[in-house]
Length: 125
Image (cartoon, rainbow, N blue to C red; front, side):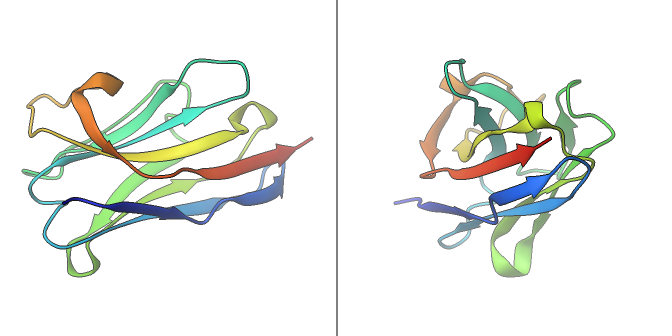
């Protein structure tokens, strides 16, 4: 059974950086597309970025393009979300998710069937 555990969230100021990690159990990140989503209070869950299991193709949303970067470490079965130049509107719970090996990768949350517990990111102005 695939399990995902996020870490790295916290309280930061505008302009700061954070790196979130999603640790998986076993040989997951080469067999699934791995995505990050976020959900701000009172808002729907929003796609942030995805990295494909095959080929490691990366895609991020327009709202974070140029600031957020997704990567993976196959040796540690971990997917990362590097978040730079953080803004108050980036405040949300960030979730890691695993889904099928679709090419091109899906950005829809219902295409991802395994989710982590989430990690809170709060950006103060």
